Amino acid sequence: MWADDGVALITVIGVMLVITILAIGSFSLASQTLFDAQRAEDETRAFRAASAGIDTVISAFGPSTLASYQGMQVTTPDGTATLTVSQTGGDAGEYEIVSRGQGLDGSTETLVQRFFYINLWEMNFAGTGSQSLMSGSSGMNGSSNIYGPFYIKGNLAVEANMSVMEGPLFVKGGKLSTKSGASQIGASTRPVKVYCDGGTDLAKGSVFVAGPFLSVPEITLPGITYDDMRAYSIRAQSESIDGLMSKQYIAAPLANMELTSRGGAMYKYFGDTTATIDPLGAGDTVLALGGAASSVTITGYGTYPCRGTFGSWGAVDTTGAVVPAGGSAPYDAAHRNTFDDFAYWDEFTGEWDLIYISGTVFVDGPLVINDDCLYIGNGTIVANGPVILNGRLRPYSYSTADVVVNKVGEDKKWAMGIVTPKSITLKGRGSNDGTTPIRDNAFDYAGAFYTDDTIFVPQPLTSLRGSILSNKMEFSSPNTDLVTNPLLPTYLPDSLPGGGEGIITPGLWSRM
Image (cartoon, rainbow, N blue to C red; front, side, top):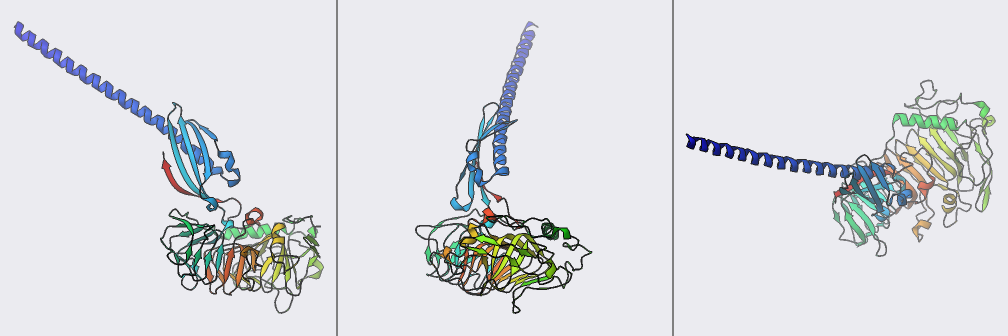
């Protein structure tokens, strides 16, 4: 019996030993799991702090405040993020954020986020359809030039004697190719930075590029809705009776010429069912400037078919000259000084007419300008119909023969915007004269042009200074120059879609 008791004791001791070992093992495993979970939570907190730092930068980023982000700290309940932000893409608008997150226990995580900050009005843009630049063999014709940032969705073929001399150049969802030995992209002293995700064939011609880089931002035009058109028309209405010049980009403020006592009863805004003008259907208002009659002609329905934003300005002091008071009253001489946001002077010179513009002008229908026009002021014409410019359009200069013919207007911060959900056709031509450097040319068109549709440039020897934002560009003749104005965003007219702040699109993300 004592032998049986000894065996039982040994058995019990063995079982207890096994249980003890299992308990110790389970405790160690639980402790390790708890430790790992705590470490993962600490690392997650550091990660969340770093992510919060990136979100803080992107939510309020602007190139002008780049220096303020260096070493900036963002404190969150999870910890603190220390940030540095640098520009990595040169003039391409590409930036990099390095965010070092530190959790409450001292754990660290470092995240790197690249992104593009792009102001649409710093570039020329053709970007909605699968092929958004059409001409000949899906490119610009010979002897055409692109200077400044350019974005296209679809293929871009650089034809013979065509050049892309300043960038960056963005080609989204298409192929970039050079078609002949006379094609040119960049120069040895200034290569063009190229972003292209559809492949390249750059074996021909003179090619000096940085890249190509595969990370191309996805950009879509803001678009114009019915509500937008209504807002534009109401804004134009209010500015036409406020007793103020809408924009004071003039050396000395002009005397107000509005007869504000007339009030706004005659104005009918877009979509107003009580309007005498059909806001959407056939027979919409047409504002036609110039023409064979050598006078302003307005056709359409209603007493004031131009929505009242039509009148006279006082004299304007400019560099080298004083432009006398201008404007006319084709519809009612008694009210020629009623509205001072928009005026037109027929045959200001033997060759050019003069347009004065301030703020927002709304035309409920097509806009047709038949003559060569110089403009004074800073403002936008919004048209609810196609726009046809049969003449040239650029800022006033005291000498139309001046070599840098746009300089006076740019020094004065004069810019005209044209906005329409329909097409824009630019038929003026002749200023692409091959002057070197190209930015000193007397451009046919200078300003800011926006269309939800297509911009047509049917004439050869046409040059454009500023920015065009369109869903598609149609160039049917050679010798077209597209040259950006880097200063345009600093005095951009009101009521331009996508104006104001730039847009941010994310790039590569990594965890260090």
